[in-house]
Image 1 (cartoon, rainbow, N blue to C red):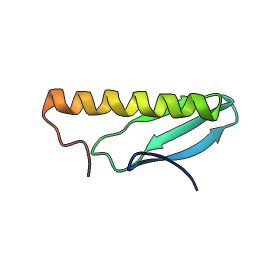
Image 2 (cartoon, rainbow, N blue to C red):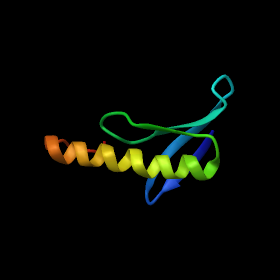
Image 3 (cartoon, helix red, strand yellow):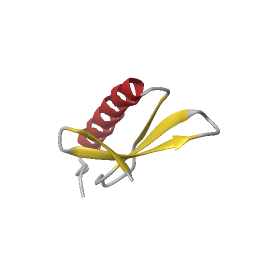
Length: 67
């Protein structure tokens, strides 16, 4: 299993051969969030962006973001 870490949040990373993209599924959330990127750097940027969007939405809805 490939894991990418941002702060203390982790994402499980797989390579989607058909789409030719890395896909990250962010772990430990009460909902789901994922990210995609053609390169590792792009995946890191999208991980950060996806996590922030998820956290903002949880704040807006008064939902606990983490399990």
